[in-house]
Image 1: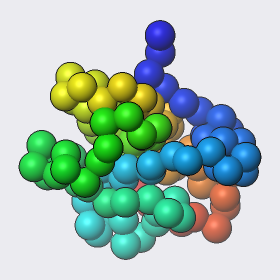
Image 2 (image 1 turned 180 degrees about the vertical axis):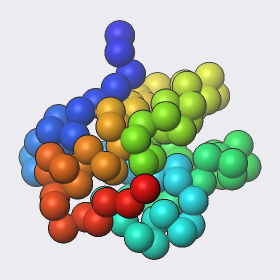
Image 3 (image 1 turned 135 degrees about the vertical axis):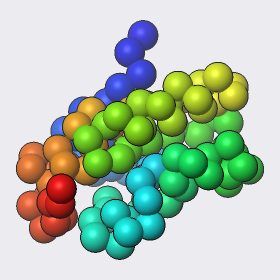
Length: 107
């Protein structure tokens, strides 16, 4: 079972009204530049001490800039017993390119 989701699959789920907890694992400065509406910021380095902010059985989608840090976060959450976690393939950059051009891109 692949623990990934594409930006299109995420957008379709959000449009359907699926209850999805969006976890942005980037840093504060990145979050202030660009974010997916409704997401919660938990920088990757603070994830171990922030587990109490998440519910084990919620549908969680982790994202970052391009999908590397969120892949680490997804693996970590699965190891901690979270059951329904996905990594957003391509991160917020793919979201900006394919879904919402109003979300700024950055390097």
